[in-house]
Length: 235
View (tube, rainbow, N blue to C red):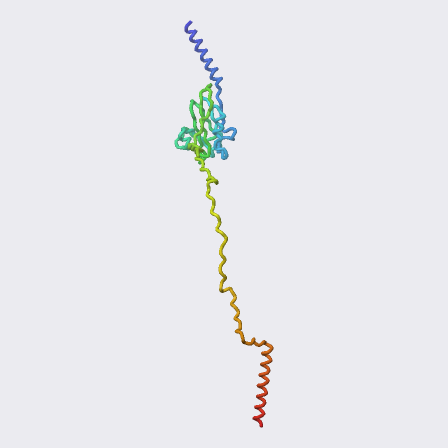
């Protein structure tokens, strides 16, 4: 009777385990399915970060990386390597697409592309894996870009400016100088020289017409004297 009870309990436990295992269906996540696959997103460097926030990753799920062989690859790396895009000695590297990774345990997983500057341009993925049935507010750890926090804004406690001087306390301006300037004495250089008056008793100077008459008279007199002398000499 005891052995039969143990056998029955064992069978029931196996059936229950199989039922639980079936209800916890594994999910296949195609990485970047809405982005076209695993490749550089030039205009959205945080595209895979945003994609991971829309997913819930549990133990047993499978990640599928769709990429063209020779143009991309995918490597599972540590957190430190993920932060600085270091592809030296990865945990696992797959160069043939598509590539699958099975999430076998709870924890954080980090994936990068090791070709060129693809990782630095945003081709990397960080996820958080939880156990089946556990609630997770966020299935992806927040990305760390090693960006220093912005300094706090300057304090607004700025001392107020002093008030402008009151216009009622200003001394009045001195009055303008008086315009009652004494006139300058007349300049000797500009004053006309006085006209010398003729001494009294002298006859007035002859006019121009009388001078011409007198001159003609003298010329006539000299001509007559010359004729007379010429006649006497011929006689």
